[in-house]
Length: 204
Image (cartoon, rainbow, N blue to C red; front, side):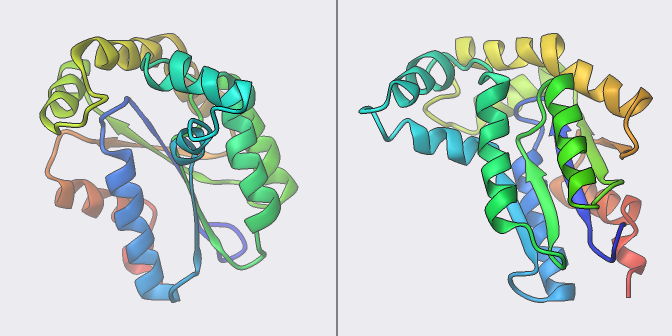
C-alpha cells in the first residue's frame, strides 16, 4: 500500500472471475473506509459504451471487430478507456481498482507509468490463475448471449498471445507486486485469499 491508499489491478483469463472479485473487494474497502472511497474502473464497460455510438467509426469497429468477434481491443483504445478515467477521477485519497486492463505488456507498462505519475507505485496486481478449460466451462455456463463457443475460444486464445506477456512483465520488470491467487475455488475463498494477500484483513 502506498500513501495509505490501495491500488489494485486484476489480471487473468476471460471468465476467471475478475469482475466479481473486483466488486467484492470494492465492497470490502468501502465498508472500512466509507462509501465513495473506491475509484473503480472497468475497461470493458467503456468499450461497450462505444458500441452504443454507431455514428462513430470507432463505435462500429469496436462493436463488430472486438465485441461481437470476442477479440482483444487495440491497446490505444484500452488505454484511452482507463486513462480518461484516471485524468478525471483520480484523487489523493481514493483507493483504485482497475478491472479489465492490462491485456498486454505494453499496456501494463503504461499503467505503471500512470501510477508513477500519480505517486501510486507500487500497486498490487491480483492474478486470478485458472486453467483454460475451467475458464471455458465457466463462461459457457453463465449463459450470456456473447458467450458462444467460438467467441469464448477467441478470448482464451488472446490470453496466451498477449496477457501472458503482461504477467511476465509484472513478474520480472515491474515495481508492482504480483499476487498469484488460485481462481479455481469458491468465490468466497478466492475473496478471502485476496483480502489476506493485500493485507486488508489486518488493516486498521
